[in-house]
Length: 547
Image (cartoon, rainbow, N blue to C red; front, side, top):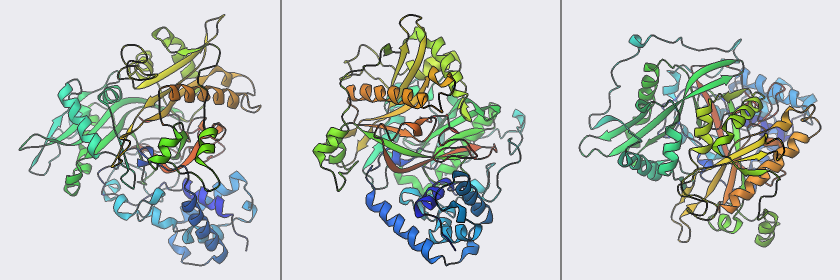
Protein backbone atom coordinates (compact mmCIF):
# COMPACT_ATOMS: atom_id res chain seq x y z
CA UNK A 1 0.00 0.00 0.00
CA UNK A 2 1.48 3.38 -1.04
CA UNK A 3 1.78 6.22 1.44
CA UNK A 4 1.40 9.96 1.13
CA UNK A 5 4.50 12.21 1.19
CA UNK A 6 5.29 13.40 4.71
CA UNK A 7 5.39 17.05 3.69
CA UNK A 8 1.92 16.78 2.23
CA UNK A 9 0.52 15.29 5.42
CA UNK A 10 2.03 18.19 7.39
CA UNK A 11 0.30 20.64 5.06
CA UNK A 12 -3.01 18.85 5.41
CA UNK A 13 -2.79 18.93 9.20
CA UNK A 14 -2.48 22.67 8.91
CA UNK A 15 -5.76 22.75 6.99
CA UNK A 16 -7.67 20.46 9.33
CA UNK A 17 -7.16 22.17 12.67
CA UNK A 18 -10.67 23.42 12.48
CA UNK A 19 -12.43 21.48 15.15
CA UNK A 20 -12.47 20.82 18.85
CA UNK A 21 -15.26 19.27 20.88
CA UNK A 22 -15.91 22.02 23.41
CA UNK A 23 -14.37 24.76 25.52
CA UNK A 24 -14.06 26.23 28.91
CA UNK A 25 -12.42 29.21 27.26
CA UNK A 26 -8.99 30.15 28.49
CA UNK A 27 -8.28 33.75 29.35
CA UNK A 28 -6.77 34.76 26.04
CA UNK A 29 -8.84 32.63 23.67
CA UNK A 30 -10.29 35.48 21.60
CA UNK A 31 -6.94 36.95 20.69
CA UNK A 32 -4.40 37.02 17.88
CA UNK A 33 -1.82 34.28 18.05
CA UNK A 34 1.18 34.90 20.21
CA UNK A 35 3.05 34.09 17.01
CA UNK A 36 2.39 37.70 16.03
CA UNK A 37 4.36 38.74 19.07
CA UNK A 38 7.18 36.33 18.41
CA UNK A 39 8.21 33.63 15.98
CA UNK A 40 11.51 32.31 14.83
CA UNK A 41 11.78 32.23 11.06
CA UNK A 42 14.32 29.43 11.38
CA UNK A 43 12.47 26.53 13.00
CA UNK A 44 14.72 23.93 11.37
CA UNK A 45 14.95 21.57 14.32
CA UNK A 46 11.19 21.57 14.87
CA UNK A 47 10.52 20.81 11.22
CA UNK A 48 13.00 17.95 11.21
CA UNK A 49 11.30 16.39 14.21
CA UNK A 50 7.89 16.74 12.57
CA UNK A 51 9.14 15.20 9.32
CA UNK A 52 10.82 12.29 11.04
CA UNK A 53 7.62 11.51 12.92
CA UNK A 54 5.64 11.76 9.72
CA UNK A 55 7.96 9.43 7.85
CA UNK A 56 7.91 6.85 10.63
CA UNK A 57 4.13 7.03 10.71
CA UNK A 58 3.74 6.68 7.00
CA UNK A 59 6.18 3.78 6.78
CA UNK A 60 4.72 1.92 9.72
CA UNK A 61 1.04 2.52 8.91
CA UNK A 62 -0.21 0.94 12.11
CA UNK A 63 -2.26 2.10 15.08
CA UNK A 64 -5.77 2.67 16.39
CA UNK A 65 -7.26 4.26 13.29
CA UNK A 66 -10.83 4.11 14.57
CA UNK A 67 -10.16 7.19 16.74
CA UNK A 68 -9.98 9.55 13.76
CA UNK A 69 -13.42 10.89 12.73
CA UNK A 70 -14.60 9.92 9.25
CA UNK A 71 -15.37 13.58 8.42
CA UNK A 72 -11.76 14.53 9.11
CA UNK A 73 -10.41 11.71 6.95
CA UNK A 74 -12.67 12.70 4.07
CA UNK A 75 -11.65 16.37 4.38
CA UNK A 76 -7.93 15.52 4.20
CA UNK A 77 -8.43 13.06 1.34
CA UNK A 78 -10.39 15.65 -0.64
CA UNK A 79 -7.64 18.22 -0.17
CA UNK A 80 -4.90 15.77 -1.19
CA UNK A 81 -6.77 14.80 -4.36
CA UNK A 82 -7.68 18.38 -5.32
CA UNK A 83 -4.10 19.64 -5.01
CA UNK A 84 -2.71 16.75 -7.07
CA UNK A 85 0.57 16.47 -5.17
CA UNK A 86 3.07 13.66 -5.70
CA UNK A 87 1.67 10.42 -4.37
CA UNK A 88 -1.93 11.64 -4.31
CA UNK A 89 -3.02 8.98 -6.77
CA UNK A 90 -2.31 6.35 -4.09
CA UNK A 91 -4.22 8.23 -1.41
CA UNK A 92 -7.23 6.47 0.06
CA UNK A 93 -9.22 6.58 3.26
CA UNK A 94 -7.17 3.86 4.92
CA UNK A 95 -3.71 5.36 4.54
CA UNK A 96 -4.95 8.88 5.27
CA UNK A 97 -6.61 7.67 8.47
CA UNK A 98 -3.51 5.80 9.59
CA UNK A 99 -1.21 8.70 8.77
CA UNK A 100 -3.33 11.12 10.76
CA UNK A 101 -3.48 8.78 13.72
CA UNK A 102 0.28 8.37 13.79
CA UNK A 103 0.86 12.09 13.52
CA UNK A 104 -1.43 12.53 16.54
CA UNK A 105 -3.85 14.83 14.78
CA UNK A 106 -6.48 13.76 17.31
CA UNK A 107 -4.45 15.37 20.08
CA UNK A 108 -4.97 18.64 18.25
CA UNK A 109 -8.63 17.96 17.64
CA UNK A 110 -9.23 17.06 21.30
CA UNK A 111 -7.31 20.04 22.65
CA UNK A 112 -4.30 18.09 23.93
CA UNK A 113 -1.90 19.69 21.47
CA UNK A 114 -1.83 22.40 18.88
CA UNK A 115 0.23 24.40 16.41
CA UNK A 116 3.39 25.93 17.79
CA UNK A 117 3.54 23.55 20.76
CA UNK A 118 0.20 24.49 22.35
CA UNK A 119 -0.70 21.89 24.95
CA UNK A 120 -3.84 20.71 26.73
CA UNK A 121 -3.58 23.34 29.45
CA UNK A 122 -3.30 26.12 26.87
CA UNK A 123 -6.29 24.96 24.87
CA UNK A 124 -8.62 23.82 27.62
CA UNK A 125 -11.50 21.43 27.33
CA UNK A 126 -13.58 23.97 25.39
CA UNK A 127 -16.80 23.10 27.21
CA UNK A 128 -17.87 26.73 26.97
CA UNK A 129 -17.88 26.73 23.17
CA UNK A 130 -20.01 23.60 23.08
CA UNK A 131 -22.81 25.78 24.50
CA UNK A 132 -22.42 28.52 21.88
CA UNK A 133 -23.95 28.86 18.38
CA UNK A 134 -20.79 27.92 16.53
CA UNK A 135 -20.16 24.94 14.20
CA UNK A 136 -19.20 21.91 16.26
CA UNK A 137 -16.83 19.08 15.48
CA UNK A 138 -18.13 16.55 12.99
CA UNK A 139 -20.94 18.65 11.55
CA UNK A 140 -19.39 18.80 8.09
CA UNK A 141 -19.88 21.58 5.56
CA UNK A 142 -23.32 23.22 5.55
CA UNK A 143 -25.72 22.67 2.68
CA UNK A 144 -26.16 26.42 2.49
CA UNK A 145 -24.79 29.43 4.34
CA UNK A 146 -26.82 30.92 7.14
CA UNK A 147 -27.28 31.57 10.83
CA UNK A 148 -27.22 28.85 13.48
CA UNK A 149 -29.66 30.54 15.86
CA UNK A 150 -32.23 33.11 14.68
CA UNK A 151 -32.05 36.72 15.81
CA UNK A 152 -34.21 37.80 18.76
CA UNK A 153 -36.23 40.93 19.44
CA UNK A 154 -34.46 43.25 21.86
CA UNK A 155 -36.95 42.52 24.63
CA UNK A 156 -36.06 38.81 24.49
CA UNK A 157 -32.35 39.50 24.96
CA UNK A 158 -31.07 39.17 28.52
CA UNK A 159 -31.40 42.63 30.09
CA UNK A 160 -29.21 42.18 33.17
CA UNK A 161 -25.40 41.74 33.12
CA UNK A 162 -24.08 38.27 33.79
CA UNK A 163 -23.03 37.68 37.40
CA UNK A 164 -19.37 38.02 38.35
CA UNK A 165 -17.52 36.58 41.35
CA UNK A 166 -18.34 38.63 44.44
CA UNK A 167 -15.09 40.65 44.48
CA UNK A 168 -15.56 42.03 40.94
CA UNK A 169 -17.89 44.36 39.07
CA UNK A 170 -18.60 45.38 35.48
CA UNK A 171 -17.49 48.66 33.98
CA UNK A 172 -17.94 50.29 30.58
CA UNK A 173 -14.61 51.69 29.40
CA UNK A 174 -14.66 55.21 27.96
CA UNK A 175 -11.80 55.21 25.47
CA UNK A 176 -12.21 58.99 25.15
CA UNK A 177 -11.10 59.36 28.78
CA UNK A 178 -7.26 59.40 28.80
CA UNK A 179 -7.18 57.81 32.25
CA UNK A 180 -9.39 54.89 31.23
CA UNK A 181 -7.57 54.49 27.93
CA UNK A 182 -4.32 54.23 29.89
CA UNK A 183 -5.90 51.59 32.12
CA UNK A 184 -6.60 49.46 29.06
CA UNK A 185 -3.08 50.11 27.79
CA UNK A 186 -1.59 49.06 31.13
CA UNK A 187 -3.70 45.90 31.34
CA UNK A 188 -2.87 44.80 27.79
CA UNK A 189 0.79 45.77 28.07
CA UNK A 190 1.36 43.56 31.11
CA UNK A 191 -1.09 40.71 30.57
CA UNK A 192 -1.94 40.29 26.89
CA UNK A 193 -0.62 37.84 24.29
CA UNK A 194 2.85 36.44 24.83
CA UNK A 195 4.79 33.88 22.84
CA UNK A 196 5.16 30.39 24.31
CA UNK A 197 8.59 31.23 25.76
CA UNK A 198 7.37 34.45 27.45
CA UNK A 199 9.93 36.46 25.48
CA UNK A 200 7.66 38.90 23.65
CA UNK A 201 4.34 40.53 24.51
CA UNK A 202 2.15 42.82 22.39
CA UNK A 203 2.38 46.46 23.43
CA UNK A 204 -0.62 48.45 22.27
CA UNK A 205 -0.19 52.22 22.33
CA UNK A 206 -2.98 54.57 23.41
CA UNK A 207 -3.14 55.77 19.79
CA UNK A 208 -3.50 52.19 18.55
CA UNK A 209 -6.29 51.46 21.01
CA UNK A 210 -8.18 54.57 19.92
CA UNK A 211 -7.74 53.71 16.24
CA UNK A 212 -8.83 50.10 16.74
CA UNK A 213 -11.78 50.69 19.08
CA UNK A 214 -13.34 53.88 17.70
CA UNK A 215 -14.30 53.24 14.07
CA UNK A 216 -17.33 55.11 12.72
CA UNK A 217 -20.50 53.92 14.44
CA UNK A 218 -18.75 52.23 17.36
CA UNK A 219 -20.68 51.51 20.57
CA UNK A 220 -19.03 52.39 23.87
CA UNK A 221 -21.10 49.66 25.55
CA UNK A 222 -19.04 47.10 23.61
CA UNK A 223 -15.87 48.10 25.48
CA UNK A 224 -16.44 45.87 28.47
CA UNK A 225 -14.23 45.81 31.55
CA UNK A 226 -14.05 44.09 34.93
CA UNK A 227 -12.82 45.93 38.03
CA UNK A 228 -11.92 44.82 41.52
CA UNK A 229 -14.62 46.28 43.79
CA UNK A 230 -12.27 47.19 46.61
CA UNK A 231 -9.74 49.29 44.67
CA UNK A 232 -11.38 49.75 41.24
CA UNK A 233 -8.38 48.26 39.46
CA UNK A 234 -9.12 47.15 35.88
CA UNK A 235 -8.36 43.43 35.69
CA UNK A 236 -10.36 42.25 32.67
CA UNK A 237 -11.29 43.59 29.25
CA UNK A 238 -12.90 42.61 25.97
CA UNK A 239 -13.97 44.80 23.05
CA UNK A 240 -16.18 44.69 20.01
CA UNK A 241 -16.64 47.03 17.07
CA UNK A 242 -19.28 46.89 14.33
CA UNK A 243 -18.20 45.45 10.99
CA UNK A 244 -20.23 44.93 7.83
CA UNK A 245 -19.02 41.65 6.42
CA UNK A 246 -19.60 39.84 3.16
CA UNK A 247 -19.25 36.08 3.52
CA UNK A 248 -19.43 34.67 0.04
CA UNK A 249 -22.80 35.99 -1.26
CA UNK A 250 -24.21 37.14 2.08
CA UNK A 251 -23.76 40.60 3.58
CA UNK A 252 -24.15 40.52 7.36
CA UNK A 253 -23.63 43.08 10.08
CA UNK A 254 -21.27 41.59 12.63
CA UNK A 255 -19.25 42.53 15.67
CA UNK A 256 -15.50 42.17 15.44
CA UNK A 257 -14.45 40.85 18.85
CA UNK A 258 -10.91 41.34 20.11
CA UNK A 259 -8.56 42.14 23.01
CA UNK A 260 -9.89 39.59 25.48
CA UNK A 261 -7.53 39.94 28.42
CA UNK A 262 -7.57 38.93 32.07
CA UNK A 263 -4.92 39.83 34.63
CA UNK A 264 -2.42 37.00 34.97
CA UNK A 265 -3.04 36.60 38.68
CA UNK A 266 -6.76 36.07 38.14
CA UNK A 267 -6.71 33.37 35.46
CA UNK A 268 -8.22 30.86 37.88
CA UNK A 269 -11.32 33.01 38.40
CA UNK A 270 -12.77 31.95 35.01
CA UNK A 271 -13.52 35.52 34.03
CA UNK A 272 -12.90 34.99 30.31
CA UNK A 273 -16.09 33.05 29.50
CA UNK A 274 -18.15 35.61 31.42
CA UNK A 275 -16.49 38.47 29.53
CA UNK A 276 -17.34 36.75 26.24
CA UNK A 277 -20.96 36.23 27.29
CA UNK A 278 -21.32 39.81 28.49
CA UNK A 279 -19.95 41.42 25.32
CA UNK A 280 -22.18 39.04 23.35
CA UNK A 281 -25.17 40.26 25.35
CA UNK A 282 -24.25 43.88 24.65
CA UNK A 283 -23.93 43.14 20.94
CA UNK A 284 -27.31 41.39 20.91
CA UNK A 285 -28.90 44.44 22.54
CA UNK A 286 -27.91 46.38 19.40
CA UNK A 287 -29.69 43.86 17.19
CA UNK A 288 -26.51 42.13 15.93
CA UNK A 289 -26.22 38.35 16.26
CA UNK A 290 -23.12 37.44 14.29
CA UNK A 291 -19.43 38.02 15.07
CA UNK A 292 -15.97 37.46 13.67
CA UNK A 293 -12.90 36.75 15.78
CA UNK A 294 -9.44 35.24 15.48
CA UNK A 295 -7.61 32.95 17.86
CA UNK A 296 -4.17 31.40 17.82
CA UNK A 297 -5.49 28.08 19.14
CA UNK A 298 -8.07 25.62 17.89
CA UNK A 299 -11.65 26.14 19.04
CA UNK A 300 -14.91 24.93 17.49
CA UNK A 301 -14.63 25.57 14.55
CA UNK A 302 -12.34 27.66 12.32
CA UNK A 303 -13.70 28.87 9.03
CA UNK A 304 -10.10 29.21 7.87
CA UNK A 305 -6.50 28.90 9.05
CA UNK A 306 -3.72 31.31 8.15
CA UNK A 307 0.00 31.20 8.87
CA UNK A 308 2.30 34.03 9.90
CA UNK A 309 5.25 35.03 7.73
CA UNK A 310 8.00 37.46 8.73
CA UNK A 311 10.28 39.68 6.67
CA UNK A 312 13.42 40.62 8.58
CA UNK A 313 14.49 44.26 8.32
CA UNK A 314 16.82 44.74 11.29
CA UNK A 315 18.48 41.34 11.12
CA UNK A 316 21.10 41.94 13.82
CA UNK A 317 18.50 42.95 16.39
CA UNK A 318 16.15 40.09 15.51
CA UNK A 319 18.95 37.60 16.02
CA UNK A 320 20.10 39.31 19.21
CA UNK A 321 16.64 39.09 20.81
CA UNK A 322 16.16 35.52 19.51
CA UNK A 323 13.25 36.39 17.26
CA UNK A 324 15.26 34.91 14.40
CA UNK A 325 18.25 32.61 14.19
CA UNK A 326 21.14 32.37 11.76
CA UNK A 327 20.67 29.15 9.76
CA UNK A 328 23.38 26.55 9.90
CA UNK A 329 24.58 27.23 6.36
CA UNK A 330 24.47 31.03 6.74
CA UNK A 331 26.56 33.77 8.36
CA UNK A 332 25.09 36.82 10.06
CA UNK A 333 26.79 39.12 7.57
CA UNK A 334 25.33 37.26 4.60
CA UNK A 335 21.91 37.16 6.25
CA UNK A 336 22.03 40.94 6.69
CA UNK A 337 23.09 41.42 3.08
CA UNK A 338 20.33 39.19 1.71
CA UNK A 339 17.66 41.09 3.63
CA UNK A 340 18.71 44.60 2.66
CA UNK A 341 16.06 46.80 1.03
CA UNK A 342 16.35 50.01 -0.98
CA UNK A 343 17.06 53.23 0.88
CA UNK A 344 14.41 55.18 -1.03
CA UNK A 345 10.97 54.66 -2.56
CA UNK A 346 11.41 54.34 -6.31
CA UNK A 347 7.99 53.52 -7.79
CA UNK A 348 6.85 56.40 -10.06
CA UNK A 349 3.79 58.23 -8.75
CA UNK A 350 4.06 56.74 -5.25
CA UNK A 351 3.22 59.10 -2.38
CA UNK A 352 1.50 59.10 0.99
CA UNK A 353 -2.29 58.87 0.92
CA UNK A 354 -4.16 62.12 1.57
CA UNK A 355 -7.74 62.98 2.40
CA UNK A 356 -8.39 63.97 -1.22
CA UNK A 357 -7.72 60.35 -2.22
CA UNK A 358 -10.46 58.79 -0.10
CA UNK A 359 -13.11 58.41 -2.80
CA UNK A 360 -10.73 56.91 -5.33
CA UNK A 361 -9.11 54.60 -2.80
CA UNK A 362 -12.54 53.46 -1.58
CA UNK A 363 -13.66 52.64 -5.12
CA UNK A 364 -10.42 50.81 -5.95
CA UNK A 365 -10.49 48.94 -2.66
CA UNK A 366 -14.13 47.88 -3.10
CA UNK A 367 -13.59 46.52 -6.60
CA UNK A 368 -10.34 44.78 -5.77
CA UNK A 369 -11.79 43.08 -2.69
CA UNK A 370 -14.62 41.51 -4.69
CA UNK A 371 -12.08 38.84 -5.60
CA UNK A 372 -12.09 37.34 -2.08
CA UNK A 373 -14.73 35.23 -0.31
CA UNK A 374 -14.89 37.03 3.05
CA UNK A 375 -14.30 40.79 3.17
CA UNK A 376 -15.21 43.96 5.07
CA UNK A 377 -17.53 46.41 3.34
CA UNK A 378 -16.40 49.95 4.13
CA UNK A 379 -18.11 53.31 3.81
CA UNK A 380 -16.13 56.41 2.88
CA UNK A 381 -15.92 57.34 6.55
CA UNK A 382 -14.57 53.91 7.39
CA UNK A 383 -11.96 54.10 4.62
CA UNK A 384 -10.85 57.45 6.01
CA UNK A 385 -10.68 56.04 9.52
CA UNK A 386 -8.84 52.83 8.66
CA UNK A 387 -6.14 54.42 6.50
CA UNK A 388 -5.80 58.02 7.71
CA UNK A 389 -7.00 58.43 11.30
CA UNK A 390 -3.93 56.64 12.63
CA UNK A 391 -1.59 58.86 10.64
CA UNK A 392 -0.23 60.64 13.71
CA UNK A 393 0.36 64.35 14.25
CA UNK A 394 2.93 66.84 13.04
CA UNK A 395 5.38 66.01 10.28
CA UNK A 396 7.45 62.96 9.47
CA UNK A 397 10.39 62.74 11.78
CA UNK A 398 8.57 64.14 14.80
CA UNK A 399 8.02 60.62 16.12
CA UNK A 400 11.41 59.30 15.02
CA UNK A 401 12.85 58.56 11.56
CA UNK A 402 10.05 58.05 9.04
CA UNK A 403 7.31 58.59 11.66
CA UNK A 404 4.92 61.20 12.90
CA UNK A 405 4.17 61.56 16.57
CA UNK A 406 1.79 58.78 17.63
CA UNK A 407 1.63 57.27 14.14
CA UNK A 408 -0.12 53.89 13.89
CA UNK A 409 -0.89 53.50 10.19
CA UNK A 410 1.02 54.11 6.98
CA UNK A 411 -0.92 54.36 3.69
CA UNK A 412 0.48 55.08 0.23
CA UNK A 413 -1.11 55.55 -3.18
CA UNK A 414 0.21 55.47 -6.73
CA UNK A 415 -1.15 58.37 -8.78
CA UNK A 416 -0.98 58.49 -12.57
CA UNK A 417 0.74 61.84 -13.35
CA UNK A 418 -1.40 62.52 -16.40
CA UNK A 419 -4.90 61.39 -15.41
CA UNK A 420 -4.37 61.80 -11.64
CA UNK A 421 -6.09 58.45 -11.25
CA UNK A 422 -5.18 56.37 -8.20
CA UNK A 423 -4.04 53.08 -9.69
CA UNK A 424 -2.70 51.36 -6.56
CA UNK A 425 -2.52 51.67 -2.81
CA UNK A 426 -1.02 49.76 0.09
CA UNK A 427 -0.98 50.14 3.86
CA UNK A 428 0.57 48.72 7.00
CA UNK A 429 0.26 49.37 10.71
CA UNK A 430 2.52 49.39 13.75
CA UNK A 431 2.10 46.95 16.63
CA UNK A 432 5.28 46.71 18.70
CA UNK A 433 6.02 44.06 21.28
CA UNK A 434 7.74 44.35 24.62
CA UNK A 435 10.92 42.27 24.74
CA UNK A 436 10.82 40.64 28.16
CA UNK A 437 13.98 40.44 30.25
CA UNK A 438 16.43 41.50 27.56
CA UNK A 439 19.31 43.64 28.86
CA UNK A 440 19.86 45.46 25.56
CA UNK A 441 16.51 45.87 23.81
CA UNK A 442 13.12 46.71 25.30
CA UNK A 443 10.91 46.91 22.19
CA UNK A 444 10.47 44.91 19.00
CA UNK A 445 9.21 47.28 16.32
CA UNK A 446 6.85 45.24 14.16
CA UNK A 447 4.93 46.40 11.10
CA UNK A 448 1.94 44.40 9.84
CA UNK A 449 0.76 44.31 6.24
CA UNK A 450 -2.75 45.75 6.09
CA UNK A 451 -4.89 46.28 2.97
CA UNK A 452 -3.76 46.91 -0.59
CA UNK A 453 -5.25 47.07 -4.08
CA UNK A 454 -4.19 47.55 -7.69
CA UNK A 455 -6.11 48.06 -10.91
CA UNK A 456 -3.77 45.59 -12.59
CA UNK A 457 -6.07 42.92 -11.13
CA UNK A 458 -8.81 44.08 -13.51
CA UNK A 459 -6.73 43.53 -16.64
CA UNK A 460 -7.59 40.48 -18.71
CA UNK A 461 -5.51 37.42 -17.77
CA UNK A 462 -3.52 39.45 -15.21
CA UNK A 463 -3.56 36.48 -12.87
CA UNK A 464 -2.60 33.87 -15.42
CA UNK A 465 0.26 35.78 -17.05
CA UNK A 466 1.80 36.90 -13.76
CA UNK A 467 1.11 40.63 -14.12
CA UNK A 468 -0.84 40.83 -10.88
CA UNK A 469 1.80 38.92 -8.95
CA UNK A 470 4.55 41.16 -10.29
CA UNK A 471 2.66 44.35 -9.46
CA UNK A 472 1.85 43.27 -5.92
CA UNK A 473 5.44 42.22 -5.41
CA UNK A 474 6.50 45.73 -6.45
CA UNK A 475 3.95 47.43 -4.18
CA UNK A 476 4.73 45.39 -1.09
CA UNK A 477 8.42 45.75 -1.85
CA UNK A 478 7.90 49.51 -1.55
CA UNK A 479 6.03 48.93 1.71
CA UNK A 480 9.15 47.20 3.03
CA UNK A 481 11.21 50.25 2.09
CA UNK A 482 8.78 52.59 3.87
CA UNK A 483 8.79 50.35 6.95
CA UNK A 484 12.58 50.23 6.96
CA UNK A 485 12.71 54.03 6.73
CA UNK A 486 10.52 54.12 9.84
CA UNK A 487 13.01 51.80 11.56
CA UNK A 488 10.76 48.78 11.95
CA UNK A 489 12.63 45.60 12.85
CA UNK A 490 10.33 43.13 11.13
CA UNK A 491 7.43 43.21 8.66
CA UNK A 492 4.71 40.59 9.24
CA UNK A 493 2.02 39.15 7.02
CA UNK A 494 -0.44 36.27 6.87
CA UNK A 495 -1.40 33.78 4.18
CA UNK A 496 -4.49 35.71 3.18
CA UNK A 497 -5.65 37.87 0.24
CA UNK A 498 -2.98 37.62 -2.50
CA UNK A 499 -0.08 37.50 -0.04
CA UNK A 500 0.88 33.94 -0.90
CA UNK A 501 1.90 35.05 -4.39
CA UNK A 502 4.73 37.32 -3.23
CA UNK A 503 5.84 36.17 0.24
CA UNK A 504 8.62 33.94 -0.99
CA UNK A 505 9.91 36.37 -3.61
CA UNK A 506 10.15 39.16 -1.04
CA UNK A 507 12.07 36.93 1.39
CA UNK A 508 9.36 36.52 4.00
CA UNK A 509 10.21 33.56 6.23
CA UNK A 510 7.57 31.10 7.39
CA UNK A 511 6.72 31.48 11.05
CA UNK A 512 5.55 28.83 13.48
CA UNK A 513 2.20 30.39 14.37
CA UNK A 514 -1.26 29.79 13.01
CA UNK A 515 -4.07 32.35 13.21
CA UNK A 516 -7.52 30.79 12.99
CA UNK A 517 -10.58 32.73 11.78
CA UNK A 518 -13.99 32.10 13.36
CA UNK A 519 -17.56 33.17 12.70
CA UNK A 520 -20.06 33.26 15.55
CA UNK A 521 -23.63 32.15 14.75
CA UNK A 522 -22.89 31.71 11.06
CA UNK A 523 -22.24 28.62 8.98
CA UNK A 524 -20.27 28.59 5.77
CA UNK A 525 -17.96 26.10 4.10
CA UNK A 526 -14.20 26.45 4.81
CA UNK A 527 -12.45 29.41 3.19
CA UNK A 528 -9.05 29.30 1.50
CA UNK A 529 -6.36 30.59 3.83
CA UNK A 530 -3.15 28.68 4.41
CA UNK A 531 -4.13 26.24 1.69
CA UNK A 532 -6.37 26.26 -1.34
CA UNK A 533 -9.94 25.11 -0.78
CA UNK A 534 -12.41 23.98 -3.41
CA UNK A 535 -10.42 25.44 -6.28
CA UNK A 536 -9.93 28.82 -4.57
CA UNK A 537 -6.18 29.63 -4.37
CA UNK A 538 -4.53 29.81 -0.96
CA UNK A 539 -5.27 33.08 0.80
CA UNK A 540 -8.10 34.26 -1.39
CA UNK A 541 -10.84 33.04 0.90
CA UNK A 542 -9.85 35.59 3.54
CA UNK A 543 -9.94 39.33 2.90
CA UNK A 544 -10.40 40.55 6.48
CA UNK A 545 -7.36 41.83 8.38
CA UNK A 546 -8.04 41.60 12.11
CA UNK A 547 -6.07 44.26 13.99
